[in-house]
Amino acid sequence: MITPAPNRSWPKTWRFLAYGMLVGFQALFVLLAMIVTIAPVVTLPLLSRVLPFAHRLAARERDRTGRFLGISITPPPPAVQDRRNVEWLGLQATLGLFIGSVAVGSPLGAVQNLAIAGFWWLFPGVTTSLDVPVRSWGEAVFAVATAVGYGLVGVLLVPPLARWYARVSATRLGPPRQSLVERIEEVTATRAAALEAHGTELQRIERSLHDGTQNRLVAVVMHLGMVERALRRDPESALPAVLTAQNAATDALAELRQVVRTIYPPVLADRGLSGAVASLAAHCVIPCTVDEQPLPRAPAAVEAAAYFVVAEALTNAVKHSGADHITVSLHDEHGVLVVEVADNGRGGADNAHGTGLLGIQRRVAAFDGTTKIVSPPGGPTVIRVEIPTGP
Image (cartoon, rainbow, N blue to C red; front, side):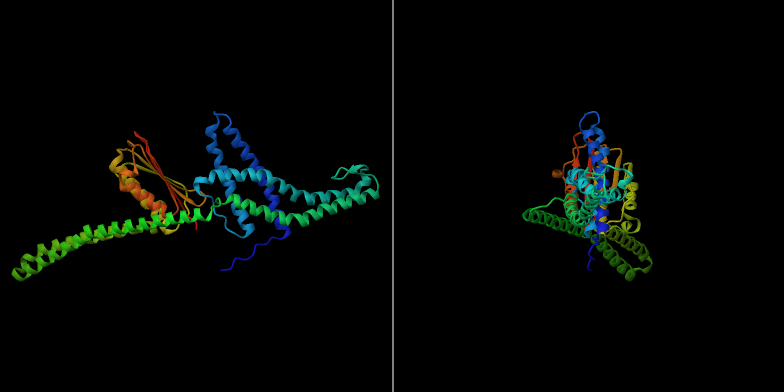
């Protein structure tokens, strides 16, 4: 599919920079608010309330700049998003504000000087935008020339300025540039994690089929053999053996369904991630609260990974934490699915002493995601997972 070239006519470039000037004022206000909250220790906790404004402002500008350039701007990774957004605020509040004022000032300057040239006689001595007084028609010609200069600046300078600044802004709104070696190393590590997670998942499925379903099917075969012998000896005594074989087949079918659910839970397709997690919480033996915000549908693989992260985290909490309450949080942060599982247990969770947390990290790493585990001795334990949902 060929993406049509973006329309960069003069009106559109002017609107881009003019609106950018308004965004520059907003960025300046948010930046000053952040400085005010950082400076005194008393207001430092307010920084967490100011940062979301910066994120929303950057997200809107990321979308607007992407539409202007005809591209899709990928948000920065969560680990550096705060820093990148603050850097963009500084850029927009200075350079963006200045360039926007040039775009807005050029047509206003042209109109102002033309008005002075035409009506100077009503206000003799009125000055042009260059602070030159107009007291005669001859001097009015200078005002007309000034208006032409403003017009030329607008027509010739605004479009290239808009394109240049849009590219500069896009580089700051997107992820930081990496060297080719760094990116290759990152892709290699992610691929290794994906292969390891895939191998672990295949081994788990094989163990479930071998130790559970296969043994139950063997039991069905054995009971059917007993039924055959009973039918040959005494058909009337075969009924109990038939019922036993039927129960064994039912158990094998239930076991097989359980294995299928661990590959991709049907509840995800039926109720989405929020509904699936709510179902996990409802069946958890420890009281569990789900704190969720409206979630857009993510790719099936991402939702499955998030579902299994919650399932594994709840299982670990039930087995090891000694907690009496668990909170699961789900929300979307600019194209990143954030999952948090917190319990008020004894803490001390360590991925070096178990496969559960390590499995979570490997599963998340396969999607270029990050896992953060905070579990000091005495608790609480918080597992935070961030999985990009975009391309």
